[in-house]
Amino acid sequence: MFFLRFILFACLLTGVLYAQAPEVVSETTLDFINELDSYYIEYQKNKNAADNYTKEEVMVLARKFYKMMAEDPQGYRKIVFQSGENRKKEYHKTGIVLPKIGVKIRAFRELVEHFTDKYYFYIIKPSYYVRAKVLSIKKEPYFSKVNPWIKLTKIVVKIEVTEVLKGEQVFQKGRIEEINSFEFWYEECQNIFEPEMEYLIPIELWGCYEGKCSGLAPASNINGNCAIFPIKNEIISNVDIFGCGTQMNWDDFKLVFQSKYILESGG
Image 1 (cartoon, helix red, strand yellow):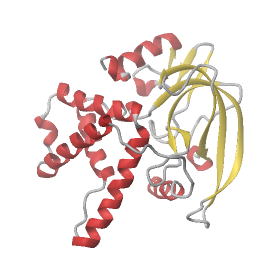
Image 2 (cartoon, helix red, strand yellow):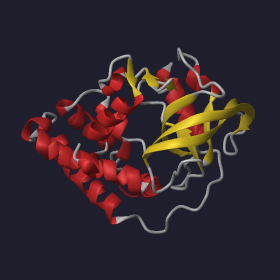
Image 3 (cartoon, rainbow, N blue to C red):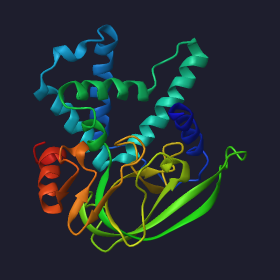
Protein backbone atom coordinates (compact mmCIF):
# COMPACT_ATOMS: atom_id res chain seq x y z
CA MET A 1 0.00 0.00 0.00
CA PHE A 2 2.74 2.47 0.91
CA PHE A 3 4.59 1.72 -2.34
CA LEU A 4 1.43 2.29 -4.38
CA ARG A 5 0.85 5.57 -2.59
CA PHE A 6 4.40 6.65 -3.30
CA ILE A 7 4.03 5.90 -7.02
CA LEU A 8 0.69 7.70 -7.15
CA PHE A 9 2.12 10.72 -5.36
CA ALA A 10 5.03 10.85 -7.79
CA CYS A 11 2.57 10.84 -10.69
CA LEU A 12 0.50 13.59 -9.08
CA LEU A 13 3.45 15.90 -8.76
CA THR A 14 3.98 15.75 -12.52
CA GLY A 15 0.55 17.21 -13.13
CA VAL A 16 0.83 20.84 -12.02
CA LEU A 17 2.15 23.96 -13.72
CA TYR A 18 4.84 25.64 -11.68
CA ALA A 19 6.50 28.90 -10.74
CA GLN A 20 9.89 29.83 -12.07
CA ALA A 21 12.78 27.84 -10.59
CA PRO A 22 16.10 29.56 -9.91
CA GLU A 23 18.23 29.86 -13.04
CA VAL A 24 21.39 29.15 -11.07
CA VAL A 25 21.78 26.38 -8.52
CA SER A 26 23.58 27.64 -5.41
CA GLU A 27 27.12 26.70 -4.45
CA THR A 28 25.62 25.21 -1.28
CA THR A 29 23.59 22.74 -3.33
CA LEU A 30 26.43 21.90 -5.71
CA ASP A 31 28.74 21.31 -2.75
CA PHE A 32 26.39 18.78 -1.18
CA ILE A 33 25.69 17.03 -4.50
CA ASN A 34 29.45 16.61 -5.06
CA GLU A 35 29.78 15.13 -1.56
CA LEU A 36 26.82 12.86 -2.26
CA ASP A 37 28.34 11.60 -5.51
CA SER A 38 31.66 10.91 -3.79
CA TYR A 39 30.02 8.97 -0.99
CA TYR A 40 27.87 6.94 -3.37
CA ILE A 41 30.93 5.87 -5.37
CA GLU A 42 32.46 4.66 -2.11
CA TYR A 43 29.17 3.00 -1.11
CA GLN A 44 28.95 1.12 -4.42
CA LYS A 45 32.36 -0.39 -3.76
CA ASN A 46 31.62 -1.21 -0.14
CA LYS A 47 28.09 -1.41 1.27
CA ASN A 48 29.62 -1.07 4.75
CA ALA A 49 31.24 2.23 3.85
CA ALA A 50 29.64 3.82 6.93
CA ASP A 51 32.20 1.95 9.04
CA ASN A 52 34.91 4.12 7.50
CA TYR A 53 33.38 7.31 8.89
CA THR A 54 33.30 8.93 12.30
CA LYS A 55 30.18 10.61 13.66
CA GLU A 56 31.90 13.97 13.37
CA GLU A 57 32.57 13.41 9.67
CA VAL A 58 28.98 12.34 9.05
CA MET A 59 27.63 15.39 10.88
CA VAL A 60 29.69 17.62 8.57
CA LEU A 61 27.85 16.02 5.63
CA ALA A 62 24.53 16.24 7.46
CA ARG A 63 25.04 19.98 7.97
CA LYS A 64 25.69 20.42 4.24
CA PHE A 65 22.48 18.54 3.45
CA TYR A 66 20.59 20.63 6.01
CA LYS A 67 22.01 23.86 4.57
CA MET A 68 20.99 22.89 1.04
CA MET A 69 17.42 22.00 2.02
CA ALA A 70 17.07 25.12 4.17
CA GLU A 71 18.57 27.63 1.73
CA ASP A 72 18.04 26.24 -1.75
CA PRO A 73 15.25 23.63 -1.93
CA GLN A 74 14.29 24.83 -5.42
CA GLY A 75 17.87 24.37 -6.56
CA TYR A 76 17.84 20.82 -5.24
CA ARG A 77 14.66 20.06 -7.17
CA LYS A 78 16.33 21.48 -10.28
CA ILE A 79 19.27 19.12 -9.75
CA VAL A 80 16.87 16.18 -9.32
CA PHE A 81 15.19 17.03 -12.62
CA GLN A 82 18.49 17.53 -14.47
CA SER A 83 19.78 14.25 -13.08
CA GLY A 84 16.74 12.45 -14.46
CA GLU A 85 17.22 14.03 -17.87
CA ASN A 86 20.89 13.01 -17.88
CA ARG A 87 19.91 9.42 -17.02
CA LYS A 88 17.59 9.30 -20.03
CA LYS A 89 20.22 10.68 -22.39
CA GLU A 90 22.88 8.28 -21.13
CA TYR A 91 20.57 5.30 -21.47
CA HIS A 92 19.55 6.18 -25.03
CA LYS A 93 23.17 6.85 -25.98
CA THR A 94 24.94 3.93 -24.32
CA GLY A 95 22.34 1.65 -22.73
CA ILE A 96 23.87 2.35 -19.32
CA VAL A 97 21.41 2.94 -16.49
CA LEU A 98 22.85 5.54 -14.13
CA PRO A 99 21.72 5.52 -10.48
CA LYS A 100 18.86 7.84 -9.60
CA ILE A 101 19.65 10.68 -7.26
CA GLY A 102 16.99 9.27 -4.94
CA VAL A 103 19.02 6.08 -4.63
CA LYS A 104 22.07 8.12 -3.65
CA ILE A 105 20.03 10.06 -1.10
CA ARG A 106 18.79 6.79 0.38
CA ALA A 107 22.38 5.61 0.84
CA PHE A 108 23.21 8.94 2.48
CA ARG A 109 20.16 8.64 4.74
CA GLU A 110 21.33 5.22 5.87
CA LEU A 111 24.76 6.70 6.62
CA VAL A 112 23.17 9.39 8.79
CA GLU A 113 20.93 6.86 10.53
CA HIS A 114 23.98 4.73 11.32
CA PHE A 115 25.19 7.49 13.64
CA THR A 116 21.90 9.02 14.81
CA ASP A 117 18.44 7.41 14.73
CA LYS A 118 15.75 6.50 12.22
CA TYR A 119 14.04 9.91 12.45
CA TYR A 120 16.99 12.30 12.40
CA PHE A 121 17.37 12.55 8.61
CA TYR A 122 13.65 13.12 8.12
CA ILE A 123 13.57 15.80 10.81
CA ILE A 124 16.41 17.87 9.34
CA LYS A 125 15.12 17.51 5.76
CA PRO A 126 12.11 19.91 5.75
CA SER A 127 13.02 23.39 4.63
CA TYR A 128 10.79 25.14 7.16
CA TYR A 129 9.29 24.62 10.61
CA VAL A 130 6.57 26.97 11.82
CA ARG A 131 4.14 27.16 14.66
CA ALA A 132 0.83 28.12 13.08
CA LYS A 133 -2.87 28.43 13.72
CA VAL A 134 -5.22 26.71 11.29
CA LEU A 135 -7.66 29.30 9.92
CA SER A 136 -9.63 27.11 7.54
CA ILE A 137 -9.63 23.77 5.78
CA LYS A 138 -11.25 23.12 2.43
CA LYS A 139 -11.42 20.28 -0.01
CA GLU A 140 -11.02 20.70 -3.73
CA PRO A 141 -11.10 18.25 -6.64
CA TYR A 142 -7.69 17.65 -8.11
CA PHE A 143 -7.09 16.62 -11.71
CA SER A 144 -3.62 15.83 -12.95
CA LYS A 145 -2.83 17.83 -16.07
CA VAL A 146 -0.38 15.20 -17.28
CA ASN A 147 -2.49 12.22 -16.16
CA PRO A 148 -6.13 13.34 -16.54
CA TRP A 149 -7.43 9.93 -15.46
CA ILE A 150 -6.23 10.73 -11.95
CA LYS A 151 -8.87 12.45 -9.84
CA LEU A 152 -8.31 12.96 -6.13
CA THR A 153 -9.39 15.18 -3.29
CA LYS A 154 -6.95 17.95 -2.50
CA ILE A 155 -6.93 19.46 1.00
CA VAL A 156 -5.97 23.11 1.32
CA VAL A 157 -5.15 24.28 4.85
CA LYS A 158 -4.92 28.03 5.41
CA ILE A 159 -2.61 28.87 8.31
CA GLU A 160 -1.41 31.95 10.16
CA VAL A 161 2.20 31.73 11.29
CA THR A 162 2.64 32.54 14.98
CA GLU A 163 6.30 31.57 15.38
CA VAL A 164 9.16 30.44 13.14
CA LEU A 165 11.63 27.76 14.23
CA LYS A 166 13.28 27.29 10.84
CA GLY A 167 12.92 29.39 7.69
CA GLU A 168 13.00 32.99 8.89
CA GLN A 169 14.10 34.02 5.39
CA VAL A 170 10.67 32.97 4.09
CA PHE A 171 8.23 33.09 7.00
CA GLN A 172 7.44 35.83 9.48
CA LYS A 173 4.97 36.01 12.35
CA GLY A 174 1.51 36.90 11.06
CA ARG A 175 2.05 35.58 7.54
CA ILE A 176 -0.98 33.84 6.01
CA GLU A 177 -0.12 30.82 3.87
CA GLU A 178 -1.78 27.80 2.31
CA ILE A 179 -0.35 24.31 2.53
CA ASN A 180 -1.55 21.54 0.25
CA SER A 181 -1.99 17.81 0.68
CA PHE A 182 -4.17 14.97 -0.48
CA GLU A 183 -6.90 13.30 1.48
CA PHE A 184 -5.35 9.85 1.22
CA TRP A 185 -2.26 11.08 3.10
CA TYR A 186 -4.29 11.01 6.31
CA GLU A 187 -6.06 7.67 5.99
CA GLU A 188 -3.97 6.04 8.71
CA CYS A 189 -3.45 9.09 10.94
CA GLN A 190 -4.76 9.25 14.47
CA ASN A 191 -4.78 13.05 14.26
CA ILE A 192 -5.78 15.49 11.53
CA PHE A 193 -5.62 19.27 11.24
CA GLU A 194 -8.54 21.06 12.89
CA PRO A 195 -9.64 24.71 12.49
CA GLU A 196 -8.66 27.13 15.27
CA MET A 197 -6.01 24.72 16.57
CA GLU A 198 -2.26 25.46 16.64
CA TYR A 199 0.39 23.07 15.39
CA LEU A 200 4.09 22.74 14.79
CA ILE A 201 4.18 22.20 11.03
CA PRO A 202 7.24 20.99 9.12
CA ILE A 203 6.91 22.35 5.58
CA GLU A 204 8.45 21.42 2.24
CA LEU A 205 7.91 22.41 -1.39
CA TRP A 206 4.85 21.18 -3.22
CA GLY A 207 4.07 20.53 -6.86
CA CYS A 208 7.58 20.13 -8.27
CA TYR A 209 7.83 19.48 -12.00
CA GLU A 210 10.89 19.87 -14.19
CA GLY A 211 12.76 21.46 -11.30
CA LYS A 212 10.08 24.08 -10.61
CA CYS A 213 7.79 24.14 -7.56
CA SER A 214 4.70 26.26 -6.98
CA GLY A 215 3.51 25.75 -3.44
CA LEU A 216 4.00 24.30 0.02
CA ALA A 217 2.99 21.08 1.74
CA PRO A 218 3.28 19.59 5.22
CA ALA A 219 6.33 17.31 5.35
CA SER A 220 4.28 14.25 6.17
CA ASN A 221 7.03 11.64 5.84
CA ILE A 222 8.76 12.58 9.10
CA ASN A 223 6.94 9.89 11.07
CA GLY A 224 5.19 7.77 8.52
CA ASN A 225 2.37 9.67 6.91
CA CYS A 226 1.14 12.03 9.63
CA ALA A 227 3.62 14.57 11.11
CA ILE A 228 0.89 16.39 13.03
CA PHE A 229 2.08 18.03 16.25
CA PRO A 230 -0.76 19.86 18.05
CA ILE A 231 -0.08 22.63 20.57
CA LYS A 232 -2.64 23.37 23.29
CA ASN A 233 -2.13 25.46 26.41
CA GLU A 234 1.59 25.72 25.50
CA ILE A 235 1.95 21.92 25.51
CA ILE A 236 3.05 20.22 22.29
CA SER A 237 2.04 16.59 21.71
CA ASN A 238 3.19 13.62 19.62
CA VAL A 239 6.84 14.69 19.88
CA ASP A 240 8.41 11.35 20.81
CA ILE A 241 10.28 11.26 17.49
CA PHE A 242 12.22 14.33 18.63
CA GLY A 243 13.21 12.53 21.84
CA CYS A 244 10.74 14.62 23.86
CA GLY A 245 8.25 12.01 25.02
CA THR A 246 4.53 12.16 24.35
CA GLN A 247 4.15 15.78 25.49
CA MET A 248 6.38 18.69 26.44
CA ASN A 249 6.12 22.34 27.34
CA TRP A 250 6.51 24.43 24.18
CA ASP A 251 9.46 26.50 25.40
CA ASP A 252 11.29 23.38 26.59
CA PHE A 253 10.62 21.68 23.27
CA LYS A 254 12.06 24.65 21.36
CA LEU A 255 15.29 24.38 23.31
CA VAL A 256 15.60 20.69 22.44
CA PHE A 257 14.70 21.27 18.79
CA GLN A 258 17.11 24.15 18.33
CA SER A 259 20.00 22.34 19.97
CA LYS A 260 19.52 19.06 18.06
CA TYR A 261 18.01 19.97 14.70
CA ILE A 262 19.03 23.55 13.80
CA LEU A 263 22.41 22.52 12.52
CA GLU A 264 24.00 25.86 11.71
CA SER A 265 24.02 26.49 15.46
CA GLY A 266 25.91 23.30 16.22
CA GLY A 267 23.65 20.26 15.90
